[in-house]
Image (cartoon, helix red, strand yellow):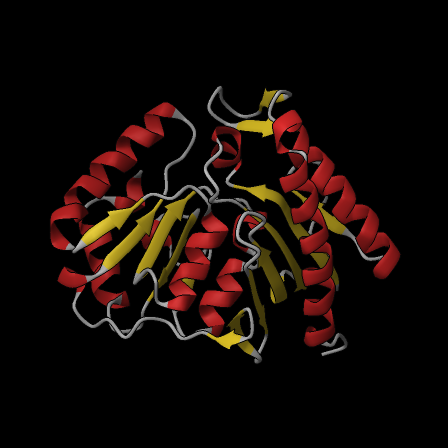
Length: 265
């Protein structure tokens, strides 16, 4: 590999922390400036935009000439290295004062994540991973859950912004709910994937994520030993499905999701 993943992680952590400090410090004023994007429920705050501008500026200083794909200002994945940034993942939580949100910064080479950091401004926790280097939380190596029974597993999930699709997703999840221990809808995909890496969730699945939502978190889950399918990799779950699960329940969960129409929502 022409890039050192460990060096890329260091950069992701550095700029992610700086953006996290900004997001935390400016929340009171930032949530007074709120717009919407795809629907009335898809919000963006002044802090989302300020955080992405900071990350882009710092990456230009630390890694000059390397392109950036961000949720707010766009961009594209190119041949070679691209930085993929979610300036606030969990913006609705941030808006309402729920401290479950993160800044996600990942480096992808030819569209594949090789390094990433997910920084939680409210707690200071830093999740990191590099290709072949494992997944870590504040210096502690992570391992996905050893769950083997779907019936006693804890699942994470999410919903789309469009009302009609959300209705269909709710119907599919309603069929799955009696077959597992419990389910959690926390509202920040990057952290849900980190929780799979830590074994705090046994699995997670969601449709319609942007690349910035999963670029760092999915690498953590995969490096921790979870079975991970990114959009387009498991068409039976839907072309835009993201899936991460402990190896011992991955096949069973895929089967249950397909049975209950998860791939058709």
